[in-house]
Image 1: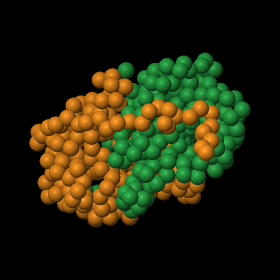
Image 2: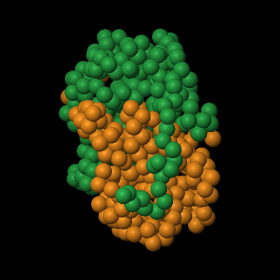
Image 3: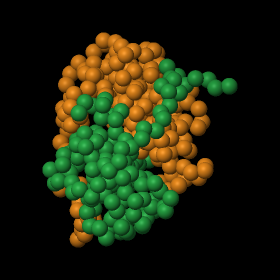
Amino acid sequence: MDLMEAIKGRRSIRKYKPDPVSEEVLRTILEAVRWSPSWANTQCWEVVVVKDQNVKSELAATLVKTNPALSSMAEAPLIIVLCGKKGVSGFKKGEAATVKGDWLMFDTGIAMQSLCLAAHELGLGTVIVGLFDHKKAEEILGVPQDREVVAITPLGYPAAEGVAPKRKEMSDFVFDEKYPVRK
Amino acid sequence: MDLMEAIKGRRSIRKYKPDPVSEEVLRTILEAVRWSPSWANTQCWEVVVVKDQNVKSELAATLVKTNPALSSMAEAPLIIVLCGKKGVSGFKKGEAATVKGDWLMFDTGIAMQSLCLAAHELGLGTVIVGLFDHKKAEEILGVPQDREVVAITPLGYPAAEGVAPKRKEMSDFVFDEKYPVRK
């Protein structure tokens, strides 16, 4: 699939078929994470691949009941949990190198986009879920103190197409040379 | 270009030709940002496109002198400054919806990967720079209080190829079902 086609065509998928995802397909998708760029090549991302129905149900229970992605968490054959190692991205000799502190959210954002695009190219759906109880998810997965859970996505073959939410116009978010002076 | 080829083949570029980037090419790259996914479709990203040599030099001066991307900032025909609107991504009714507070770093990370991949497909280079004086960059660009500068990249045609830094093995960052118990 052409790159721009993938970027423009990838949708959030909230209905999944139960069909399994082969190890080969999963590996290709994780390779996309592996080849993502990161702060000084620190590669702080870590991925937990959940197939166990009990663990999937436990993770689903960390979402608020109104989350439109809730049912997809148990439906999809896999859940991918994207985590980050703290204190490496954005750090230099153990100290935060910028006013932004830890850059793990930025680097895992990069990795998540790679993952979603690679999945889409292979005909699989994803939906990035950030609204859940992170502490509970960390307990469920036995995440060590120096790591944190960032975002979750189900991974599987779409049972229904996604809808493209409206995007801002280019002129709403692109500025020449400086920010426009607002009155 | 094939998507996986783009993800695996994109390198950080630190040497640029002075050749200009056409408006059409620039627009395609910014379309990749526009079509990125974001928290509840909040699209918090904003982009400042800097062509003015004086502004480019001012921005270059916000980098530490040892940054290997320093010379590329004045060399490249364009600098893209990726900013974020605060208090929208990760928020619900004005309150942070998760323990992570603002998700603008995550969403701008997603957008930056889209931008870097789209640029690479069109034969252009990028290098994501996060280590600079963010406050000074915000002053230079007149960034309003409710926005912040996140990362910068030069954008132009590569004058030298980049080198692929070594990646972790899959087994170093992918875990099945739960985090492994470390002794």
